[in-house]
Length: 286
Image 1 (cartoon, rainbow, N blue to C red):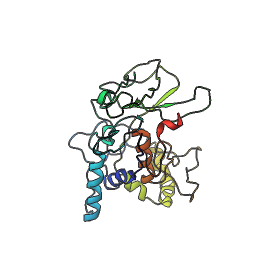
Image 2 (image 1 turned 90 degrees about the horizontal axis):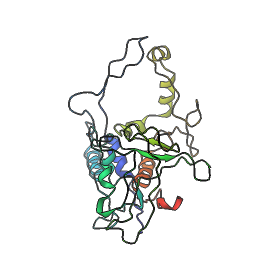
Image 3 (image 1 turned 90 degrees about the vertical axis):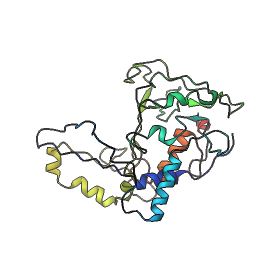
Image 4 (image 1 turned 180 degrees about the horizontal axis):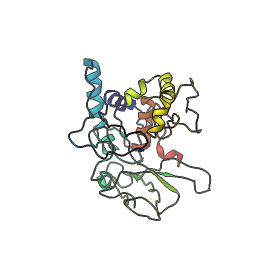
């Protein structure tokens, strides 16, 4: 396994800083509850650069978008460094609906990745052609202690660009309903890709604005069914970084403060790419 420590966090950060989703819905009348308007028709209103960017900012966005489309390999000309355990080999594989930076597309691209270049992975029971891309977390370790970590779907065993590697794929059995993901192994919980549109704008929101918005117009928000604290590990308490006390805001538990950290973690967890912020190979923890 060669060392793949490179600063790839700026790639996702560059794309997310410039991208924004243009999605508007009319609010529900007071007292009627929240109504899902369904999928919006027409062309995507997201995925492109914000208007009014400087030449440098647009170049940053364009470079980030191109790297977001890179297909990682274990070895080769680019030598980008697909890790020993991974969920896919490209950022855009999980983030391309309705445009680059979105959520998982149909058909599910991870099925083809499972056996790409001779890999000998089995398709997990919860990964189906017309179903969502799913990330699997195990609730507990084999000894019963809490786990909660991501267990990558695939390994590089058998790939032509990874001679000599022999790593066991995780055991996701017994199977449940393939489409809904329900039933089956009770130790597995799933996550699906979330859109990245506007993440750069979220990073730019001051903590004071987040806390002020929580408290503003409470009667109106209550009538519309809008409630809740900033995302937190402890209910009712904003999740803050121990470094400077600011509110963190990226990740399923709002565990990451910045897009740089968020992107570096995604490279390591989802594609096994080591970098300056996450220098260890994924298989070292298993």
